Image (tube, rainbow, N blue to C red; front, side):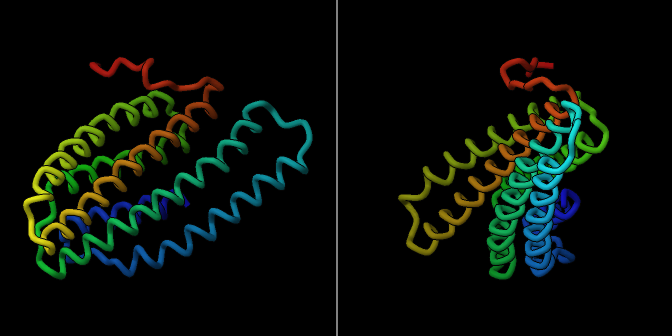
Length: 205
């Protein structure tokens, strides 16, 4: 499921970059598979929690955390689908896409990739890197929000609707970054049994 979400975010990023090989149909086809996988994994985790005796603390942490992680992954894919549709439309209409959206998508895609690595390897230090990367997403989100909102009142109706669509994409990408952070914290908890807090990080490093 994580790999499918990763490829979905990657395809969304390609659409924002107007890569001719990008496919909105691929994103849409992935959505149903991701939703089905989410339901199947949730049921499996619940069954194991109910049926298996003598589980270790880490096993319990893992099963409980996975049910939360998969809901975040599903949400990331949903947002990627929405952003992808706007990017596809902008490509068809030959409309310029704000560079900040492209940069945000690239950072979020890397965060999604790193989450897979952390989950597969228990690389807890990389979980901290994911939290730091979210600062870039937040910065780009705030920067683009100000730019789009500043110009919104001075545009004609068609241009205002266009700006509004990019504002939605901006917000969706920021939420995708937040979801990646939430997953990183959960995976860190699985690996260490400790809570990872953003205010405990040395952001300057």
